[in-house]
Image (cartoon, rainbow, N blue to C red; front, side, top):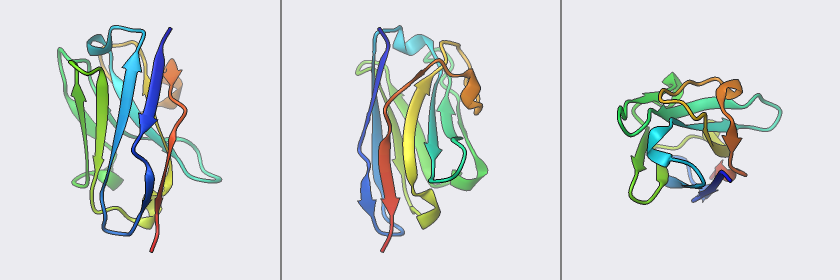
Length: 125
């Protein structure tokens, strides 16, 4: 059974940093793409960053986080990370990781088969 568990969220001041983790189990972790999404109150869930399967490993970011967020995967630990620097109040949202059981990632939430429960990130002074 596929399980994705996010952690690392919290309250941080503008300009601060957080590192989110997504621990995966129940599937061939290094064979599939993983995405990070976020959903702010009253807004649609949006893709933030994603990484192709371990064989490829290419990473992608939406424009609003380019240069500030970094996605990485540790196939030995079955874990995906999202390092978030220079955080802004508009980054406040629940962050989710998801897998789509394909080699290549996308930013469409409809392409993903399994989701974690989410972790809250709040950026406020």
